[in-house]
Image (cartoon, rainbow, N blue to C red):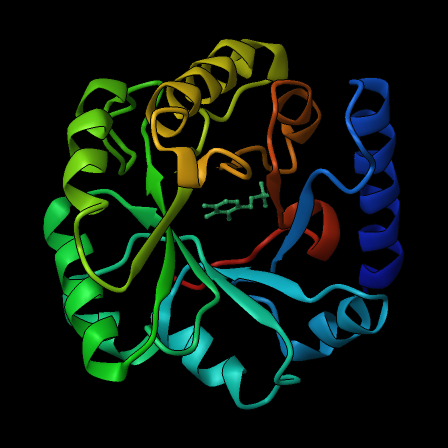
Length: 232
Ligand SMILES: *Cc1c(COP(=O)(O)O)cnc(C)c1O
């Protein structure tokens, strides 16, 4: 059995040390505990240790856990989102990290208007252009951004990427730097958004490098909850 609370606190401390070493403030980034496939019995200790931000990648799992966990949790939808499922979570999630098409953004916007909420979103960029991954290219993201900022009841807060799974996290440094540069290009023009553009990048394997390259949100699953077992 994993001591998930101790894992969480260890990674949080590590994150803070990396931030300070990089010349940033210790609270410059947020640690999101990625609890997908994991039972609430493993999540509760992490909550009790102070975590309020949990990441999930399936709509059904968010819906199931939502009622069972404390109501002050901020649920982050980090997985691919099908348009027909948007309506189930639009008023439950704190932020959707995985917006990768105008169509999806339009559906979220429409549902948000219906439910009279504003949804914080990030645009997902497939920086390494991996076949197996969702997300726009760096170039497509510029067009997507221009269209999405015009939609009602959406708050476009920044960018997200899932870097390749690599043995040496240094290999991902350039991808993180590219995403950061794009965020500067896109959001600096928009004075309102300038202050706190969000960069969701870095996972168990590469969060240290991501933080050094400017991540403001890291999404850590395995290092907190242990390996995931998928029943097929
Ligand atoms: C599963 C997942 C993570 C966490 O990955 P770990 O390697 O377990 O830390 C982060 N981001 C996304 C989008 C994920 O799907």
